[in-house]
Amino acid sequence: MKLYYRAVTQDGKNVSGIIDAKDPKEVATYLRKHKLVPIKIAPATETGFKKILSFFRKTSTSDLVFFTRQLASMLSAGLTLIQALVILKNQIPNKAMSNIISDIITDLEDGKTFSLAIEKYPNIFSPIYVSLIRTAEGSGLFDKIIVRLADNLEKQQNLQKKVRGALIYPAIVISMMIVVVIVMMVVVVPQLNILYGNVETALPLPTLIIISLSQFFVNFWYVLLAAMVGGAVYARNWYRKPTGRKFVDTYILKIPVLGRLLRENMMAEFTRTLGLLVNSGSMVVASLLRSSEVVGNVLYKEAIVLVAKKVEKGISIGDAMSASPLFPPMVVEMVKIGEQTGKLYDSLLRSSEYFESNVEETIKVLTTLFEPVIMVILAVGVGFLIIAVITPFYNLISAI
Image (cartoon, rainbow, N blue to C red; front, side, top):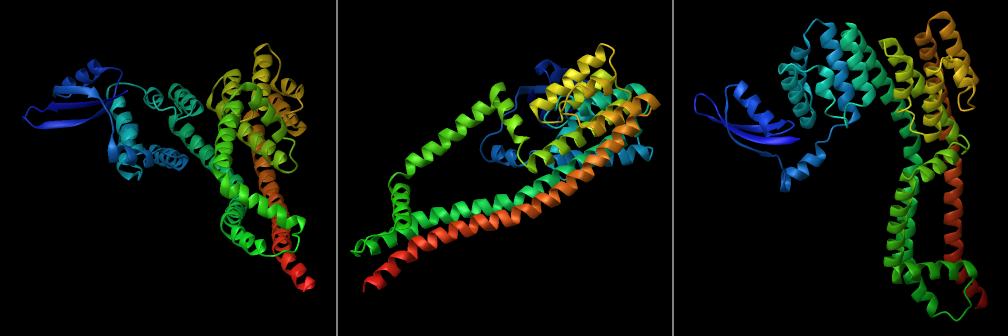
């Protein structure tokens, strides 16, 4: 936990700061070791403006990628781990990440290993990251594994950016459509309703539908808002349950094009991570269990865990994968070849590159399909509004 301390130096100067420690005794021991006399040790709290600022200082995936790549470069250049971290602490632009690096340096100076130092921050350093670092510390190939880890994180980040990028355009268009509909229902249609109220001609069905919806929006907006918030909360809680998560993860894979994109993206992440773990010296079963954490889909996670259990009983990875329809035949064959030739890492790496290429192609197809579909939806919506607004005028002119 974070503990605030105030202490006095040998020169009589007051110093203060925040330390991540188990209890106040650990902080007091640390201060005395550095020739400081502790005066006050209490839980660190942030209030007011500082608390608001801390919300915007959270670390991101980009910070982790930058940290890992820079650390790998400096270690390859011959710097010691502490020297590299000290330089990184001053280089990294994110203040929150800089404070974490400072805490890591403190732990290393106190004799802790790097893996133990970063394990305290699970929101930043994933279990796979920590596992690779721990393996690297015991293998004597720390700098090489750090480089591979940096490469893996960069590929993972680039792939995620491409997937998000494909979904940004339709998300923006749909959001703007919702805003336009709300403005029409709340501002424009009520004015038209006043105008149509003075017309004795019977209104057509599209106009009646628009007016009824507008009246509901204006008079019962709080009911609609409560229903949306309640529905969102219920959906979130339901999705967090095993049954809800499995239901969504099952049917989302059946969506045309999008389901294929998700499957190929998960296979790219899985094969790349498994290859990295195996190549770093981790045990195969442990590597499979760790790799199951990156897929993000319950069905695939359960399938990978089942493969790990079969491998633990003596079955080869390829044979264990072939029993599940979730693993493409290409992956199964590549894994079998890798096991037979003793080059499992190379086979998994080629598989990940294959799926990354497929993801890029699927994103292009998905982007191409989104544009006409969205245009059709916009055309139908605009056409309906035009018919609903103009038809009464046309009927009135015809009657005259």
